[in-house]
Length: 438
Ligand code: NAD
Image (cartoon, rainbow, N blue to C red; front, side, top):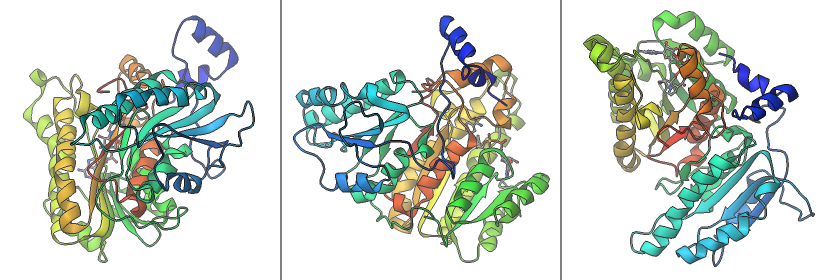
């Protein structure tokens, strides 16, 4: 599972050799830990366009980084460019004016966040200018290097975007780049203690015995949630270890069981605040060689069970108002993959589910519905991929390395935060800006 190439390029001789050969140069990413909870350095706040968004400066100040001092030669941990009032393509010159002089002064593992506005249906000049920001962000993400990321945050209300800005300006978003994060959903946010935003809440994570699911359970427990850890009875030993380590409750259960929703509801008699559908399987074969059984099992676990349990738990009110459903898609569901017609169909189905259900779940149940779409993440699932394909998967993204389960877990924790209730119907790619399906 270890990325030996990343280790090699972290040494001086390895860097020299791989540079001479023109090979990718991944920078080890700065991720969240108790010892390194924040990025190292100040935030530079700039504005492009006629004015900035009222309240954004205060929100940015609360997001955790000290403001830049203006000292000559200062290096920035992050740059926030407020482009919310860009309304014409001519205004775009200001994006260049603002960022051109500072882009080289971003520290490694730095962040560039553009704040943009929703596209106006009534003003195609505004829509052109705001959509232009997306192309800009995706291109800068590809060229910036040094483990830095570039994302676009769409917002109208800074308070509703605070948890998202905090996430983007922190080491927790290390593997998220080239993405558009929309915070214009209709549900009210309820900001709590940013250090323990899930205190007093209950989260159920499927597929929690290992891999990404275990990391999600760990992050949600760290953030204060009581975690119900679900996995197949065959994984009970690992499941119990994970749950016990986190002070949570193991729930050995096959998510495709017809009565799975009832079991979940009775394991959470006071209701759930977060339902994380992470369980997933692959049964790869080209379509011509794929027996129906392989097709059906993947569709059953990855998609049908997600639909059935979500519907039942919403209908009975087992997911409380203010709660959230977070499903797991994949970049394979966006780009497709050889040998994965079944898997990609199931993951694309998740995207359809999220987009269609999100507005209704918000209106009828006060619940948000989003998905994470991981790229290449270092787990047992990807360790089983043949070496050359694995190596290509690791390098074919802007950060030139695979993500870790923790990267998906941090994204899930941000979505599960009640302060993120303005994020709804989104599919968030945690893929280091993978070239696949970009
Ligand atoms: P994994 O195989 O390490 O873990 C998946 C877990 O789901 C296992 O513990 C397994 O026992 C459990 N599970 C499988 N079927 C189940 C069922 N019927 N009921 C309950 N639990 C069940 O996989 P992972 O790499 O941690 O992936 C987690 C999720 O992320 C999956 O949905 C996967 O498709 C998705 N994903 C992973 C990657 C990656 O690169 N690893 C990329 C994209 C998407």
